[in-house]
Structures are given as structure tokens and as C-alpha cells.
Image 1: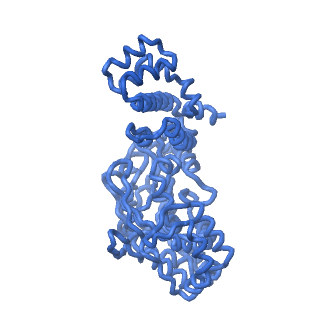
Image 2 (image 1 turned 90 degrees about the vertical axis):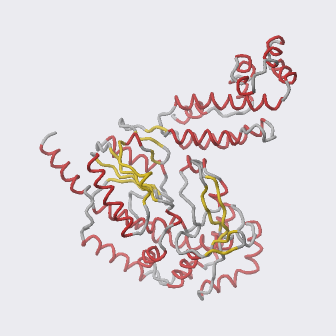
Image 3 (image 1 turned 30 degrees about the vertical axis):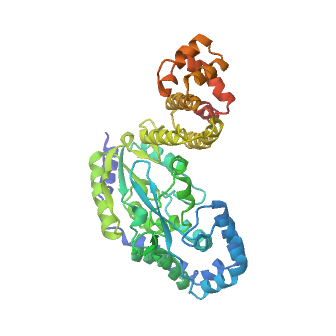
Length: 481
């Protein structure tokens, strides 16, 4: 390492020690910008209540679908409700008397095990949140860091991955500080969040309503539980990405409160500013943040200082068991692994989650036709491979294709139930009668039968293609051109 490189490394090491002292000039400039913005945002509620804005919000809520809240109203009933109540709704928003209803508590099983508590707002509350979002987002989003990618216009997970890849391949930052915020959307401190929003928004009516959304009770088994932490859709996490977006429960995503992602970015913008002032290289997607450093020692110093900042300044909790400083290839970011040569790979956990989703679709006791199973599989597989199209993963997709076809062969054989029916089915697909009868009477279970030469010949790759099954490898190859 020459003298210039040593100097550069020393400089980055000093930045990456993570001292809490930050240049005051940058902070003063930021607050000056916020003060100017607040002066221009003292009458936002009129924009929220503009009929054109409400129509746009209604269309978005309707297209998002989602389950009803505590009042039982569906998105299909919202149009009639608006025709009869729009004037009263607008009046309550303008005079500050609008009161959100409690969110309906629901639990969903997490892919990695355990349960996640979610909150489903009513469709009217979702409409109001969407109307507020459409006014606030154009004002606030431009103030966010360029290293923030989650739930922002014109930004997506692939942009975050591309930036992370450059840090590793072009700048030689081969270690990552990967910290996990424990139940972030459940534990956002309302007072701290509201103070950050009040820096940017001057309309006190709007601030009061946002506070009420944050404090709306959680209805569980007929009992309304008060909340002093969390966002309007308590328990909701980011989506991934199409990877984890497709892998998580669709209804939970549709039930998302429209304001929550923006409010999360407002709070975590403090973290972004702190990291930028310290000169760190980082990528953040909602509550998933990775900081890239050149050495393990620098990473450990950064981890200690950032954890201290998050817990003392923002009152957030860091899950120390899931957080780590490690070589980039040992951690995952948005479902991918970053390789030292600058390429992307699929993380093993993402493959496991994809297999779990396939298992759910191909459960043997579902009682639906193979054609229906293939339709559902295709919906998942196309989105999944689209998300991972930039990863070097052809070998993994080949293995996954083979495994999926075996699952479908097993599903089809299970549907035949009896040995005689299995033999008849195999004969129709071209297996010689003696071999079909011998295989059907062998006493092997459907999973073992699904991997025999006779079954592979009968339900071949070509046969599955004729049934309409999407091949991950062929779809991946087509996306490379």
C-alpha cells in the first residue's frame, strides 16, 4: 500500500470511528432549509381536501384492494360512502375534528418462523392517509438522502443493489456493517417522529391528524388497545422488493397504511444525515441499512457508534443477535449476496423462502387441479425471477426448476390416489404397460415415484411446457438480452 492509499485509509478510518460530534454548519444549513419549507406548508390541508386529490386517492386505494378494517367496509363500498359523506369528511379534515378509527389487529406467519402483528386501517382512513401522502411526498421526498432507496418515486431495490455493488467492486469496501432494527415499525417513538415531521410541515391541522393516526388504537378480539409507539400500520415491514414482496403474504402488503413508509423515511433521514456527515458509504432501503467499510476493525467501530446513535438519539432498538460486521459475501441485502468480483448472487435464505412458497402452492391436500396450481406457481415464479434477473444464479435456477417439476409430479400422482389409476395415467403418457403397472404397484410413496425414470419420461420438461409451466432458467435467459 503506497503513502497516498495509507493516508486515504487513515482518513476513512477516522470517519468510520463513528464519533458523535458532527459538523454544526451542515446541521444549521439543514434547519434553515426546513424553516423555509415550513413557512410554505402552513395551508396544506386545503390541498389534501381538494376534490381532484381525493379522487386520485380513492383510485389508488381501490387499486390496492386490501381487507376491511374494524368497520367492515370494503374498498368496493367506498365509492358509495364518498358520494354521501365527502362534504362531511372534508369539513372534519379542514376544522381538525377528523378522528381515525382503531386499526384491526391481525397476525401473519413470518417466512422465517414466528408471527408478525399487523394493523389494518379502515378504507376511509386509508383514503385520508393516501390523500395526505400525495400532498406531503412531493414536498418531503426531495429532501431525503441519495443513499435512501425504499418507497421513493423513481427508485427501486435494484438501484440500491447497484450502488452497493459499486462500493464493493470499485472502492474495495469488502466488509459490511449490517444492523437489524428490532420491530422497527412497531417501536417508532411518536414524539420523536412528530418533531421530525414538524420540522418540514407547518400546517398544525395536518400535524394533529398525523398524530391521531399514530395513536389510533389497535382492535384485538373486541378490545381496543392504546398505542404510544409504532406507525399507522403497526407491524408492517418493507417489501421487498419484488423478492420479498412476492414472498410475503399479499394481503398484508395490501393492508399497508399508505403513510407509514414516508413517516419511516422521515425518521430515518436523521440516520442518513449522520452517516453522510461522517463520510460513510451506505445504502438504506426502508429499515434495511448496510454501511460498507474497508476493514473489520473499522466496521466494528462504526457498528458501536451507529447503535449508540440509534438507541440514544432516535430511541430505536437494534437486534444485536441479527446485526453483524462481516465480509459482504456472508450477509444478504435485499435478498441478494454481494460477491467480491462485483456480481450479485441469490442469498440462500431467499431460495429457502421461495421453496417454502412453492410448498404452500403444491400442498397435496389442496384439492385443486394441476392447471390451477400451475397458474398460481407462474404468478409467483415470474415475479421472483424478474427480481433476481441481475444476479448470477443460472445454476441455482436449474436446480430449482428440477425441484419444482418433481413437486408437481408428486402432486399429480397423489391426485391419482390408487395404483391402478397411477398405472393408467402413466400409460396414457407413453409409459409401456408392464413398466407402468410395476411402478404403480411398487409401494413407493408419491415423492419417490416422482423421481423415477418412468415418471420423468411421462411428465417430461416438454410435457410441463405444454401445460403452461414457466421455466425459471428459460425466463432468466430471456431477460439477459
